[in-house]
Length: 132
Image (tube, rainbow, N blue to C red; front, side, top):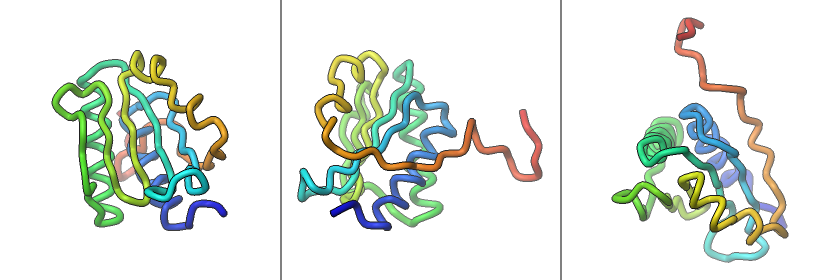
């Protein structure tokens, strides 16, 4: 059994929002066979607490704008080292790069298949095709 299409779409929107905020190593893991509480873990990282907070804000904005979804739970926002956004079907982990290396979620869940997020390269260009 693989993650439902709706969960994959949630992960793609969140993943693209993270990538647009220059998150590092955006990866989605299909944990639907290992866990009953969620389908996908989306993991990404930032190089500073400020960037982690910016990535989180970007994900929340895009999920609300595009899919009308708000997280049912948030953890870690105060320290902005490892912020967890629980959207029920997916759980987003935005980690400081140092914490990501230490906790190594990808290694912990190495048996979970990787979901192809089909991310655009680099930040999304502003409307009208102008680039900064």
